[in-house]
Every structure is written in C-alpha cells, then in structure tokens.
Length: 361
Ligand code: TYD
Image (cartoon, rainbow, N blue to C red; front, side, top):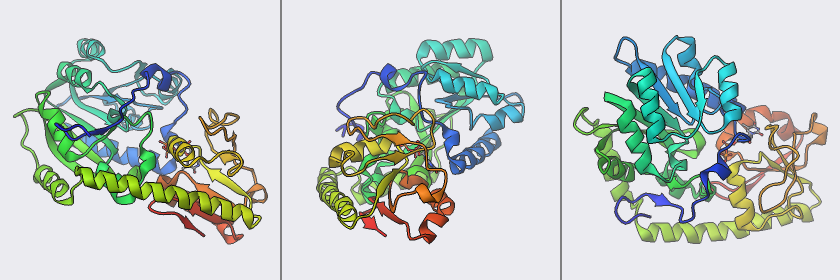
C-alpha cells in the first residue's frame, strides 16, 4: 500500500505486451449478465451527455459490448484496446475502435481527429495500468474542459470484506478505494467528483473524475472517504489479518478437495478465470487434485492453466459428462451460473466455493 495515496498495488510489474496482445482471451460478451450491465452503463452515460454532438471514448473497449449502445444511437465514439483480435470483433458490431494502448500521444491524436471527449470510460481497465501518470496526461489532452473520466474497478473494501484474495493477480496492478482515487486524481490536477458502489465482479466502485474546480463533488465522495477511514480499509493491521485469514482458507480449500476425492467424487473447475491462477498457485492445486477446468472461451480451451498445469476444456455437452462436484472459480458470476446449472444441482451435483469462505454442498 502506498503510504501517500493508499492505493494497494503489486510490487512486481509484468510488461504490458505480455498481458495485452492480439490473442487476449477475455471477452466481455462471454457473460450475459455483464453484457446487460454494460448496456445499462451505456444508457446511464448517455443521460449525462450535455453537448449536442458528444464524443465518448472507451479505454479498454474489449469486444465493443459497452460502446455498441453508442453506435446504435449514432453517438460519436471511439474504443481503444491493445487486443487487436477483440478490436476486430468490436468493428464487426458496428463499433469504431482502434488497436493500441492509451498514451498521451494517442490521446492527442484522437483529439486532433475527433475533437475533445465529453466522457472517457474504462471498466476493469484502470486497475490494470501501473503508469497512471501517463493516463492522466492523456486525459488532460483528450477531455474537454468539463469532460469526465468514469471508471469502475474491483474495490479494496469488498476484497477485505469478502476475503476475495483472487482479485490479486498480475493484470490487477491496483486495488483502488475512494480515498486512493481522490488522492491520485488530485495529484494530477483532477478531482474525484462522484463514487458509486456496483455489485458486479464481487463488488466494485465506479469513480467519476473531472478537472479540478470544474464540477462540484457529490456528497457521496466525502461519505465514502469517511467510511473507509472508520472501517480501517487502509489500516496495515487490517491488511495483515486479511493475509492471515486467507492462509487458513487455503488449507480449508485443499482439504475440501481432498475430501471430495477421498469420497470417490469426481471434481472439475468451473471457468478458467484469471482469478483462478491466483487460487491454484497460492493453494498448490494441480491436476492431481483438480484434473480439468471447463470454460466457454475458445482461446482458453486446449491450453493449460499457468503455473498449475491443469487442462482447460470446453464444457461437456450434456450433464452426463459433468463431474460430481464443481469448484466454482467464476464466483462473481454465481447468479448467472446457478440459473444455468439447475439440472446439475437437481441431479445431486455439488459446488465448492472459496469466497467468502470455503463452502461445500
Ligand atoms: P471473469 O469473471 O471476468 O474473471 P477473470 O477476470 O478472473 O478472468 O471471467 C469469466 C470467465 O469465466 C471467462 O473465461 C468465461 C468463463 N465463464 C464460463 O465458462 N461460463 C459462464 O457461465 C460464465 C459466466 C463465465
């Protein structure tokens, strides 16, 4: 945790080209719920637009799921994403998008071509970017005088509350909070002007940031910052007890898997999420404890999980091919998955979860 701004962050930085490239496997549209979430976000953003011919930019636009609403409504927009494979898919949806990383030079180029942006939006992207100085320099170049940056990312407070340690992985460089984002924004000539809690991905905050002194902050900003102080979200003792608790949970998860196997039940992982890499490696779970993980993403199928070497395969076509027990890695999509997998449960299928605690049944 940075002693000045309080952002919780990784100490090792993986070169961005190794993580974000034209074989990037995560697709926003792989979750029906996330697609409907982003349709709602887009509708909300449309409501905030003030100018007669607004221009909206999305950093990390992925396959264009969010910007599609803008394209359909004929609103000027541009997505930017280093995953050229997904930028092509965004184009196929009618979304204007370009491959690349968002940098000051790119931002200036975009402004020269399209004019100032009224809204820059980023979902699950800002926390992936260690070099925030350059991002803010780019925003300074691109945003109009009253333009805003709206971004949503996993929330430190929720990670501590749920013990969702699997939110910590190479791509998630930062775990933000209202306190840290306010400080980061201020040190770049901007200000945090609104905060909203959203339920997706295990609990996120959506931050709205504008140029300093251009827009009045809502009361939610002070309320969230005061709440974080009173809950001790940035206290070192709280972070230490989080570490101790997940250490115990690691042992319980290993035991749960061993017990299932000892009882003769077959086990498979449900979804090869990025988060699962943390769980598998931290808990020392390999193919001996978990022989396979199923995932709907074609790019992940036929590969092995990093470090732990578990094969990733498409889901069996009928419930007959299903295991007795699933270890649920995509716990942030639990509602969507439970609605889909009612037959598995009706046939006596069991779930192992590890957030907010190890639960079997
Ligand atoms: P996500 O929840 O975004 O987690 P992370 O950021 O940790 O990767 O990833 C979702 C993954 O889960 C993606 O690989 C697709 C997969 N998935 C399924 O296989 N089936 C499903 O029903 C859902 C909702 C997701």
